[in-house]
Image (cartoon, rainbow, N blue to C red; front, side):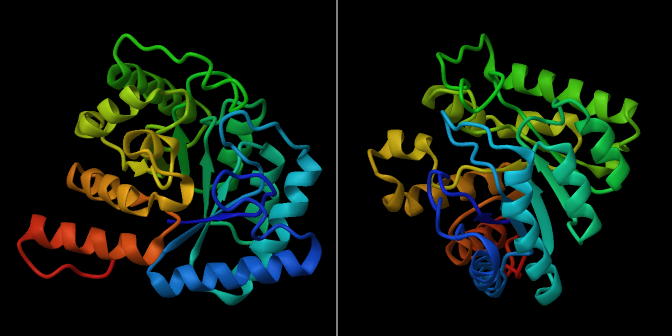
Length: 270
Protein backbone atom coordinates (compact mmCIF):
# COMPACT_ATOMS: atom_id res chain seq x y z
CA UNK A 1 0.00 0.00 0.00
CA UNK A 2 1.59 3.23 -1.19
CA UNK A 3 0.92 6.42 0.78
CA UNK A 4 -0.41 9.45 -1.10
CA UNK A 5 -1.19 12.43 1.13
CA UNK A 6 -3.03 15.29 -0.59
CA UNK A 7 -2.59 17.47 2.49
CA UNK A 8 -0.45 20.54 3.27
CA UNK A 9 0.77 19.26 6.65
CA UNK A 10 1.28 15.47 6.79
CA UNK A 11 4.50 14.65 8.60
CA UNK A 12 6.51 13.18 5.71
CA UNK A 13 5.15 14.33 2.34
CA UNK A 14 2.68 17.03 3.35
CA UNK A 15 2.24 19.65 0.64
CA UNK A 16 3.81 17.55 -2.12
CA UNK A 17 0.50 16.92 -3.91
CA UNK A 18 -1.61 19.74 -2.43
CA UNK A 19 -1.91 22.72 -4.76
CA UNK A 20 -5.65 22.95 -5.32
CA UNK A 21 -7.62 22.14 -8.47
CA UNK A 22 -6.31 20.16 -11.42
CA UNK A 23 -2.60 20.63 -10.74
CA UNK A 24 -2.84 18.72 -7.45
CA UNK A 25 -4.79 15.93 -9.11
CA UNK A 26 -2.22 15.63 -11.91
CA UNK A 27 0.66 15.53 -9.42
CA UNK A 28 -1.18 12.92 -7.36
CA UNK A 29 -1.76 10.81 -10.49
CA UNK A 30 1.93 11.00 -11.38
CA UNK A 31 3.00 9.86 -7.91
CA UNK A 32 0.37 7.10 -7.86
CA UNK A 33 1.61 5.86 -11.25
CA UNK A 34 5.17 5.78 -9.94
CA UNK A 35 4.10 3.72 -6.93
CA UNK A 36 2.16 1.28 -9.10
CA UNK A 37 5.22 0.87 -11.33
CA UNK A 38 7.25 0.17 -8.19
CA UNK A 39 4.89 -2.58 -7.10
CA UNK A 40 2.07 -1.00 -5.11
CA UNK A 41 -1.27 -2.76 -5.53
CA UNK A 42 -3.12 -0.30 -3.28
CA UNK A 43 -2.79 3.51 -3.18
CA UNK A 44 -3.97 5.09 0.08
CA UNK A 45 -5.20 8.67 -0.46
CA UNK A 46 -5.55 10.94 2.56
CA UNK A 47 -6.96 14.46 2.73
CA UNK A 48 -6.69 15.00 6.50
CA UNK A 49 -3.36 14.88 8.31
CA UNK A 50 -3.33 12.44 11.22
CA UNK A 51 0.18 13.24 12.47
CA UNK A 52 0.47 13.83 16.25
CA UNK A 53 -1.03 17.20 17.10
CA UNK A 54 -2.80 17.60 13.76
CA UNK A 55 -5.87 19.82 13.67
CA UNK A 56 -9.09 18.57 12.04
CA UNK A 57 -10.28 19.91 8.68
CA UNK A 58 -13.80 20.61 7.49
CA UNK A 59 -15.72 18.00 5.54
CA UNK A 60 -15.74 20.21 2.45
CA UNK A 61 -12.00 20.82 2.61
CA UNK A 62 -11.31 17.10 2.86
CA UNK A 63 -13.62 16.39 -0.08
CA UNK A 64 -12.00 19.15 -2.16
CA UNK A 65 -8.59 17.60 -1.56
CA UNK A 66 -9.48 13.95 -2.11
CA UNK A 67 -12.11 13.78 -4.85
CA UNK A 68 -10.03 15.17 -7.76
CA UNK A 69 -7.18 12.76 -6.97
CA UNK A 70 -9.50 9.77 -6.77
CA UNK A 71 -11.17 10.66 -10.06
CA UNK A 72 -7.87 11.03 -11.95
CA UNK A 73 -6.31 7.88 -10.52
CA UNK A 74 -9.43 5.78 -11.07
CA UNK A 75 -9.59 6.93 -14.69
CA UNK A 76 -5.95 6.17 -15.48
CA UNK A 77 -4.62 3.35 -13.27
CA UNK A 78 -5.49 -0.26 -12.54
CA UNK A 79 -4.99 -0.10 -8.77
CA UNK A 80 -7.13 -0.38 -5.65
CA UNK A 81 -7.79 3.09 -4.25
CA UNK A 82 -7.95 3.19 -0.47
CA UNK A 83 -9.41 6.24 1.27
CA UNK A 84 -7.57 7.30 4.43
CA UNK A 85 -10.44 9.05 6.18
CA UNK A 86 -12.77 8.98 9.16
CA UNK A 87 -15.48 11.14 7.56
CA UNK A 88 -18.81 9.57 6.55
CA UNK A 89 -19.37 12.00 3.68
CA UNK A 90 -15.93 11.19 2.28
CA UNK A 91 -16.71 7.46 2.45
CA UNK A 92 -19.91 7.99 0.50
CA UNK A 93 -18.59 10.37 -2.15
CA UNK A 94 -15.38 8.48 -2.89
CA UNK A 95 -17.18 5.13 -3.08
CA UNK A 96 -19.41 6.49 -5.84
CA UNK A 97 -16.40 7.43 -8.00
CA UNK A 98 -14.36 4.27 -7.64
CA UNK A 99 -12.71 3.93 -4.24
CA UNK A 100 -12.13 0.28 -3.36
CA UNK A 101 -11.33 0.38 0.35
CA UNK A 102 -11.78 2.54 3.46
CA UNK A 103 -8.90 3.05 5.91
CA UNK A 104 -10.04 4.72 9.15
CA UNK A 105 -7.59 5.63 11.92
CA UNK A 106 -10.61 6.21 14.19
CA UNK A 107 -12.06 2.74 13.51
CA UNK A 108 -15.47 4.08 12.43
CA UNK A 109 -16.13 5.85 15.74
CA UNK A 110 -17.22 9.18 14.26
CA UNK A 111 -20.96 9.77 14.24
CA UNK A 112 -22.48 8.14 11.18
CA UNK A 113 -19.24 6.42 10.13
CA UNK A 114 -20.43 2.86 10.74
CA UNK A 115 -23.60 3.37 8.75
CA UNK A 116 -21.85 5.14 5.88
CA UNK A 117 -19.13 2.50 5.65
CA UNK A 118 -21.70 -0.30 5.66
CA UNK A 119 -23.65 1.38 2.88
CA UNK A 120 -20.60 1.55 0.58
CA UNK A 121 -20.10 -2.22 0.65
CA UNK A 122 -16.32 -1.66 0.67
CA UNK A 123 -13.65 -3.41 2.75
CA UNK A 124 -12.69 -1.41 5.84
CA UNK A 125 -9.46 -1.19 7.82
CA UNK A 126 -10.01 -0.51 11.53
CA UNK A 127 -7.10 1.06 13.40
CA UNK A 128 -6.37 1.35 17.11
CA UNK A 129 -5.66 4.82 18.50
CA UNK A 130 -5.43 5.71 22.19
CA UNK A 131 -6.85 9.17 22.74
CA UNK A 132 -9.82 10.77 21.05
CA UNK A 133 -8.04 12.45 18.14
CA UNK A 134 -4.57 12.84 16.59
CA UNK A 135 -4.43 16.21 18.36
CA UNK A 136 -4.31 14.57 21.80
CA UNK A 137 -3.27 10.96 21.18
CA UNK A 138 0.32 11.48 22.30
CA UNK A 139 -0.56 13.12 25.62
CA UNK A 140 1.10 10.63 27.99
CA UNK A 141 -0.27 7.36 26.52
CA UNK A 142 -0.49 4.56 29.08
CA UNK A 143 -1.23 0.83 28.90
CA UNK A 144 -1.09 -1.95 31.43
CA UNK A 145 -0.64 -4.40 28.52
CA UNK A 146 -0.44 -2.69 25.13
CA UNK A 147 -0.87 -5.88 23.08
CA UNK A 148 -3.93 -7.06 24.99
CA UNK A 149 -5.55 -3.63 25.08
CA UNK A 150 -5.08 -3.12 21.34
CA UNK A 151 -6.56 -6.58 20.72
CA UNK A 152 -9.50 -5.86 23.02
CA UNK A 153 -10.26 -2.54 21.32
CA UNK A 154 -10.12 -4.05 17.84
CA UNK A 155 -12.35 -6.92 18.96
CA UNK A 156 -14.96 -4.43 20.14
CA UNK A 157 -14.80 -2.49 16.89
CA UNK A 158 -15.18 -5.66 14.84
CA UNK A 159 -18.29 -6.49 16.87
CA UNK A 160 -19.65 -2.98 16.30
CA UNK A 161 -19.10 -3.35 12.56
CA UNK A 162 -20.89 -6.69 12.47
CA UNK A 163 -23.84 -5.19 14.34
CA UNK A 164 -23.94 -2.36 11.77
CA UNK A 165 -24.09 -4.82 8.89
CA UNK A 166 -20.43 -4.90 7.84
CA UNK A 167 -19.54 -8.58 7.47
CA UNK A 168 -16.39 -9.83 9.13
CA UNK A 169 -14.84 -10.86 5.82
CA UNK A 170 -14.72 -7.18 4.78
CA UNK A 171 -12.57 -6.15 7.75
CA UNK A 172 -8.82 -5.55 8.09
CA UNK A 173 -7.09 -4.60 11.34
CA UNK A 174 -4.29 -2.10 12.01
CA UNK A 175 -2.64 -2.00 15.49
CA UNK A 176 -1.93 1.70 15.03
CA UNK A 177 1.81 2.17 15.39
CA UNK A 178 2.52 5.72 16.55
CA UNK A 179 -1.09 6.49 17.40
CA UNK A 180 -1.24 7.05 21.16
CA UNK A 181 1.84 4.94 21.90
CA UNK A 182 5.34 5.54 23.24
CA UNK A 183 8.43 4.04 21.65
CA UNK A 184 8.32 1.19 24.16
CA UNK A 185 4.66 0.50 23.31
CA UNK A 186 5.41 0.47 19.57
CA UNK A 187 8.40 -1.84 19.90
CA UNK A 188 6.53 -4.25 22.14
CA UNK A 189 3.54 -4.30 19.80
CA UNK A 190 5.68 -5.00 16.75
CA UNK A 191 7.69 -7.68 18.55
CA UNK A 192 4.47 -9.42 19.57
CA UNK A 193 2.47 -8.77 16.39
CA UNK A 194 1.66 -12.45 15.94
CA UNK A 195 -0.53 -12.26 19.06
CA UNK A 196 -3.09 -10.34 16.98
CA UNK A 197 -3.58 -13.35 14.70
CA UNK A 198 -5.94 -14.61 17.38
CA UNK A 199 -8.45 -12.12 15.94
CA UNK A 200 -8.36 -14.12 12.68
CA UNK A 201 -8.41 -11.08 10.36
CA UNK A 202 -5.79 -9.66 7.96
CA UNK A 203 -3.32 -7.21 9.51
CA UNK A 204 -2.22 -3.91 7.99
CA UNK A 205 0.96 -2.39 9.40
CA UNK A 206 2.05 1.23 8.97
CA UNK A 207 5.44 2.08 10.44
CA UNK A 208 6.96 3.88 7.46
CA UNK A 209 9.18 6.84 8.49
CA UNK A 210 7.35 7.19 11.80
CA UNK A 211 8.61 8.78 15.00
CA UNK A 212 9.26 5.36 16.53
CA UNK A 213 12.01 4.87 13.96
CA UNK A 214 13.40 8.34 14.54
CA UNK A 215 13.48 7.72 18.28
CA UNK A 216 15.04 4.27 18.01
CA UNK A 217 17.73 5.32 15.51
CA UNK A 218 18.01 9.09 16.15
CA UNK A 219 17.19 9.86 12.51
CA UNK A 220 15.14 12.69 10.94
CA UNK A 221 12.19 11.85 8.70
CA UNK A 222 14.20 11.89 5.49
CA UNK A 223 16.73 9.37 6.87
CA UNK A 224 14.35 6.65 8.07
CA UNK A 225 14.13 4.36 5.05
CA UNK A 226 16.47 1.69 6.43
CA UNK A 227 14.62 1.60 9.73
CA UNK A 228 11.30 1.46 7.89
CA UNK A 229 12.49 -1.51 5.83
CA UNK A 230 13.60 -3.31 8.98
CA UNK A 231 10.15 -2.91 10.52
CA UNK A 232 8.53 -4.13 7.29
CA UNK A 233 10.67 -7.28 7.33
CA UNK A 234 9.79 -7.93 10.96
CA UNK A 235 6.08 -7.32 10.37
CA UNK A 236 5.93 -9.62 7.33
CA UNK A 237 7.84 -12.33 9.16
CA UNK A 238 5.22 -12.09 11.90
CA UNK A 239 2.31 -12.40 9.49
CA UNK A 240 1.39 -8.89 8.35
CA UNK A 241 -0.69 -8.93 5.16
CA UNK A 242 -0.46 -5.29 4.00
CA UNK A 243 2.41 -2.85 4.48
CA UNK A 244 1.48 0.86 4.24
CA UNK A 245 4.65 2.63 3.05
CA UNK A 246 6.22 5.69 1.46
CA UNK A 247 9.17 3.86 -0.14
CA UNK A 248 7.36 1.34 -2.32
CA UNK A 249 10.16 -0.08 -4.49
CA UNK A 250 12.56 -0.68 -1.62
CA UNK A 251 9.82 -2.22 0.52
CA UNK A 252 8.68 -4.54 -2.29
CA UNK A 253 12.21 -5.90 -2.55
CA UNK A 254 12.51 -6.28 1.23
CA UNK A 255 9.16 -8.10 1.39
CA UNK A 256 9.99 -10.36 -1.56
CA UNK A 257 13.30 -11.30 0.04
CA UNK A 258 11.62 -11.97 3.37
CA UNK A 259 9.01 -14.17 1.75
CA UNK A 260 11.66 -16.03 -0.25
CA UNK A 261 13.36 -16.97 3.00
CA UNK A 262 10.12 -17.88 4.75
CA UNK A 263 8.99 -20.04 1.82
CA UNK A 264 12.51 -21.25 0.98
CA UNK A 265 11.75 -20.43 -2.64
CA UNK A 266 12.02 -17.52 -5.06
CA UNK A 267 10.12 -14.45 -3.86
CA UNK A 268 7.27 -13.54 -6.19
CA UNK A 269 5.96 -10.07 -6.90
CA UNK A 270 3.25 -9.12 -4.35
